[in-house]
Image 1 (tube, rainbow, N blue to C red):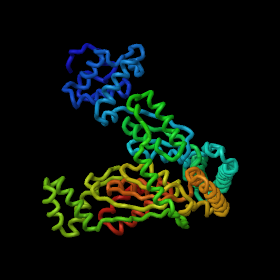
Image 2 (cartoon, rainbow, N blue to C red):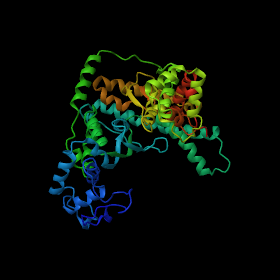
Image 3 (tube, rainbow, N blue to C red):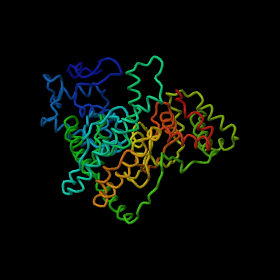
Image 4 (cartoon, helix red, strand yellow):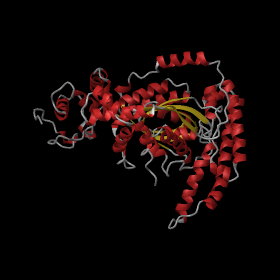
Length: 495
């Protein structure tokens, strides 16, 4: 390392003499700038940091453990010059913020989690915890509609009454239906039974139910997330964006300096909504998760494409030569290539990257509870989706039916649908908060075979929740029928 700049770097880097080291004890934006220098400076990261510290450009406060005073005038000029003015948005990816978000609706949490795929989330799970009565979001717009507000609040209260009634009926039924495991303590058995009851009773809760989540994102992803939320039709999501902006700005202030709603998205949404506004959705009576492929490449074409990519990678051929050779191979040899590429996969492995070139499209009609699981833990799936509605049917948990609770369940679903329709006549966006976890949402997905291997492997495992497991079992069976050699090793977590 160049020692021209006499600064003690041990407060900021994990070592001074090795080629791999961590950088710490500095504001996130400063770390981003140090990394940004590498494209235009021949110095090492440590040398660039030493230079900045020696010049006092970071306004470091030694008494605060080395943390730079981010809001000082000098530091503000530094960030403005090198972060905003650097002219390369990838700089923002090196600044990270961790955010705790509490008491937002399930409707808003889904919008947040879909805003940018580079963010990471851990959310309160209704599968493992019992919500409290009254933990619901109440839209401010309802203050101007006292009659509708009363209907809304009555529905939320009835949802919790029904949830409690389902829990009271499910737990004794499950104790009869599910035996206690050998060596399992009474407490562990009770917890296991309650978890299953939580999973099923939550289907009557609405999207107004509050949730908590932890979130981590880099500066660019967070900026794009805030833009998406500010452009939302929901006032709750727009307020969430401003709350997040205020708090994140204490960690990476300059990167969020020019966040504002996306005028293009808002205008395109308005035009398309106006164009399609007269089309009325037809009511369907789908009773459980429905999943199908809407675009599947021909079997031989899929195998040929995979073989082409493998010949490029492992035989060193040009694309044209690889494609020409792959097209001459008999089907049995193409299937053997797929076998060679996939047969050694273990349950925790990702398949070879060549599978990313094969793309599939799927249609799902799934419960909001199912959808909320799907939008997390996916890696590279691309979604288009309708808004929460009561026009596409709903899912009834099998245990609810088996326990003799279906009549109580359906009675509440009917009440919820009546309130949703009444609210929708006044404000369709507010009506979405009264949609239940049971009601279906239309989703379309485009994903590579690589991503399908991840989703099928994860979601068909014995540990997966029954609703999403059924969904991906349907897709796996269809993929097996159409592309047997390619689907053979997708389902690997058999317990």
